[in-house]
Amino acid sequence: MEADLSGFNIDAPRWDQCTFPGRVKHFFNITDPRTVLVPDRELDWAKGMVEKSRMGVVPPGTQVEQLLYAKKLYDSAFHPDTGEKMNVIGRMSFQVPGGMIITGFMLQFYRTMPAVIFWQWVNQSFNALVNYTNRNAASPTSVRQMALSYITATTTAVATAVGMNMLTKRAPPLVGRWVPFAAVAAANCANIPMMRQQELIQGICVKDRNHNEIGHSRRAAAIGITQVVISRITMAAPGMILLPVIMERLEKLHFMKKVKVLHGPLQVLLSGCFLIFMVPVACGLFPQRCELSVSYLEPELQDTIKAKYGELVPYVYFNKGL
Figure (cartoon, rainbow, N blue to C red):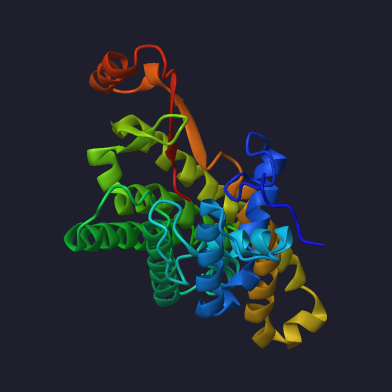
């Protein structure tokens, strides 16, 4: 029996995005690390199915489950603003495999200065790529701006890590283990705004309820970027705060002293266990499509909206990025 797709809206979220549990379920779905292994031809099929569904011309015999799977792949691999395929490393679905390796080794190799510098550089290079990939793409960024942002962000991260590592040399061992998280948190506050500075300079596109563009707002950009910074720090916090405590205790056990070579891989594995849950939880802290009262926008943009729409547009909406 053929499924009735007449009332099916592929862009309607499967879970209520106005609630935190609904957003977490949504991001559990699209940040599934298994989607990283899906070949390009299947991703292209998914994009084709999504576009056909939007036009109401899906092939006969198509089931709802097929469309939902296609939407999952589409949301995991294609940018919500441009519809272009994102690079694999920059996708949020790569946060678990990529983040677990980097986080595990940052926490393992925190004692020597060369190791601290190297892994902080690797981490912030990874973050810079993720930040750029998941930006609000309505604000174009030049190669020169990207290069300057990358250099500034990675330098800030490395300097923070090195400085804090020196300050905590005489502190208890556990405090030293927390230095990577402190550096990551501080660096995120620099990395994300720097990689997305064009949004703060030119503003990001804001739309009405019907997705019609009505202007660009710097205040909306500041709110979106702030929420992303909070989400990223939250994503890293449980693993980078609790894992050092766990490893501090495990390393005192007799059998763990005999297998020091496995300490690094163990931290990588445990980091992955934290990230599997924390990536969707952190992404779901705030709605992807933000709502902002017109009264909070820049005065000149408020005047433009009121002159054109009167009181018909009380709120604007924008993509905050991830």
